[in-house]
Amino acid sequence: IAGITQAPTSQILAAGRRMTLRCTQDMRHNAMYWYRQDLGLGLRLIHYSNTAGTTGKGEVPDGYSVSRANTDDFPLTLASAVPSQTSVYFCASSDSKMGGNEQFFGPGTRLTVL
Amino acid sequence: GQNIDQPTEMTATEGAIVQINCTYQTSGFNGLFWYQQHAGEAPTFLSYNVLDGLEEKGRFSSFLSRSKGYSYLLLKELQMKDSASYLCAPMDSNYQLIWGAGTKLIIKP
Image (tube, rainbow over all chains, first blue to last red; front, top):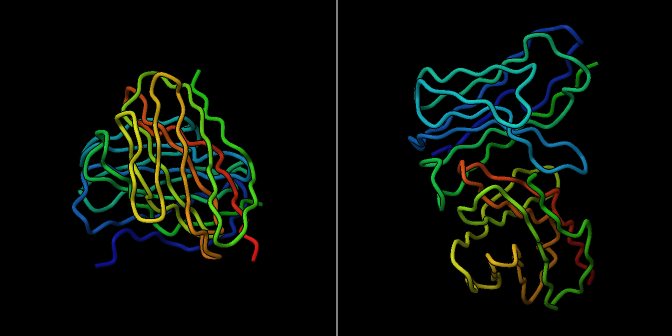
């Protein structure tokens, strides 16, 4: 059982390019999340999905989009990358969004936008 | 607004005990999580408190006081592998985790 995987591990991207970060979980979790983590700041929620077919905006959604066509996959797309999107991106999942359900994290994608 | 406050960095000695404090202000409350994050790795779950009091899990314990907006993580018998960042994350009324910047714990021999 892999748990939750992300691809790519790292990426250097030219500003203005489109990029999709992939996230797949095999735990049949209903809820999935995308966070970014920047030095000195806490994890910030970009988008989330409480169940397949639904998505919602988090704290910092601008410049990002997501889709949740099925339970397992939750890709994050940067339509036109900007240098301020340089960050480490973590995908996470939980059985449900309700309290007490721990979030399991993928290994992260380190993205550099030049 | 929502706010999490925890020390930026702490240093402790191998074999000792350390307490990492966290104070929070959130819109509603649905429990509080502690996560451990080693450098360059993903966060991993340590504990969850929803009621006041102490939850013990091996060498790690977590305490919550909802009326004070306060939690702490207690690590006993410190080992070198405990060198990591510890993230405090209360859950708000929308069931979203509000993450602190984390406390970097440095363990010295």
